[in-house]
Image (cartoon, rainbow, N blue to C red; front, side, top):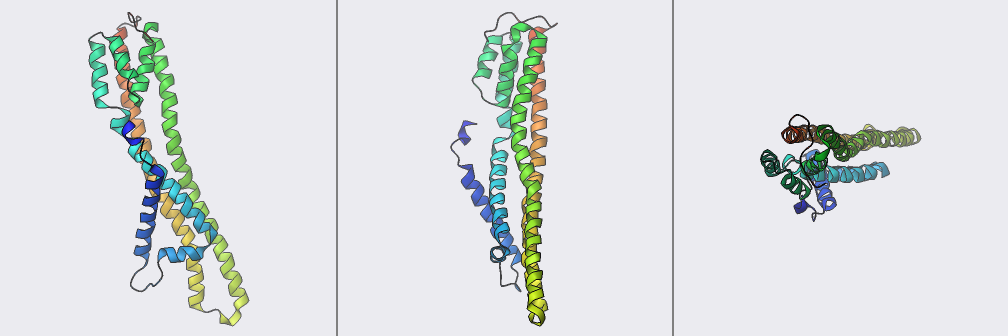
Length: 246
């Protein structure tokens, strides 16, 4: 995972958000429309700017999670094969060193498991369970942040729309006979742009969060199987392993 540490994910997220907004603007601006999405967003007011900031933060986090929370990074196949081979050969200390030299999720859980090898099967299972709960919770916190942003984005959009509609009807009531249908339609469309933006932020983030949660669940299941297999191989009938430096 060290290859990704130097990447500035905030900048990438900003670029991605701008590209998405640009695509949305070009899609809304057809032949009969002279105003783009960004032009309408400027007229929507302060709540639209808040939504744009939320979208930048949300898509930056989503992009970072999609790149870092990947199956082969959480559970490197070569490490899984190496641990399995070393344990089958009876080289528990070598497996411990291999796990200690890797900072992936598999490496962390395998290290916790092998550190308790002298305590027997129950000690190893307990250490694996505790480490798994801690590390899985860290990953789920990232996904939880995406879910939170996806949940509040439509609410912010609805708030912006409500404020815009109040202002629109206030102007209409003061305008009297000068208010025409085209002016009413323009004011309402500007107000509704906040709801549109909120939905465009929430929908993709919900999909990404669901995808990441399913990925983490599957990878954690596979890693638990790897660790349980090591425990069975090391302990056999549940007796403590010979010697392992923890």
